[in-house]
Image 1 (spheres, helix red, strand yellow):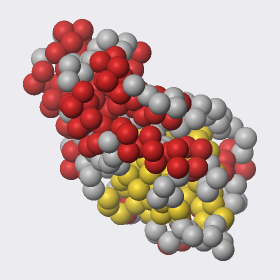
Image 2 (cartoon, one colour):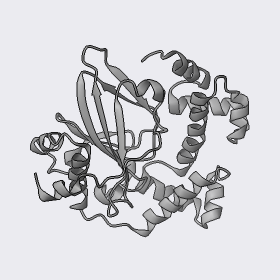
Image 3 (cartoon, one colour):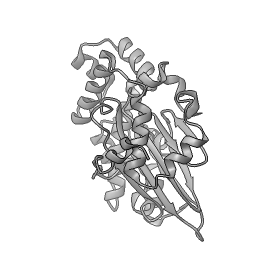
Amino acid sequence: MSKVLQKSANRFQKKARRHKGILDPANAATHFQLSRYLPSADLAPFVEHHWTIHWDLRGQPPYISEVLPHSSVNFAFTVDRAWITGVTTGIYQYEVKDVGTIVGTMFKPGGFHPFWRQPIVMLTDKVVDVTEVFPEVDEDFRHALLGLNDDELMVAKVEELLTARKPALDQNMALIDSILETVAADKDLRTVEMVTERFYVSGRTIQYLFQKYVGVGLKWVLMRYRLLEAVELAAQLQEPNWASVAADLGYSHQSHFVNDFKKLVGKSPLQYTQTIRTGEGK
């Protein structure tokens, strides 16, 4: 084991907040353990967090984890494979079975561009092998990584892989990050026009930058923020008033809200609420 990895132990801070993107989080927590770690200062402009998933379902049926789409690129490692997942515009599903571990990294929206160095929209709704970007991630690398059997040591090895590329932050990434931080904090910013007025940037420029750096348009990102609020309410409230929720989220017609919710989650609000109450399909 290298001295770098030995020194890396216990340096990564865990994220305490629950991952809001997991559908039916209570049921998911009974099937696998998810941990998230904040990146080092050098990678903080590019990486949202590193993550690990551990599970032991020996003697039990497989479990399909469902995750809301996010405006981020992920890459992940198991003993058998390593892959990059672009922004998914619909619900993302992953089957866990038997026993296993995954080590991964979620990049900030726009944060994968310095590594990919092509328009991120080329990865949207696609999965590619990690070797297309990191050819050094061969079978030996995967086995060495997963063989560490310690979350922080595995995260440290992934960070070594990333920092070796010497990613550089540019002004476009800084603008995108500022826009997304503002949108997340100000729920009244519900349209692309409102954002362009706030940041004195044209709609055409915003569209170009988000396609190139993020992989989806700002309009889609704004819709996701609104619907994530709705998913949270569905998990918390026994009988949500969906007409009221739609109005609170800025929808002028409940039917538009239902259509958007179904595109993102794969179920209508009512179907989703019934699913998490009964555990159907799990």
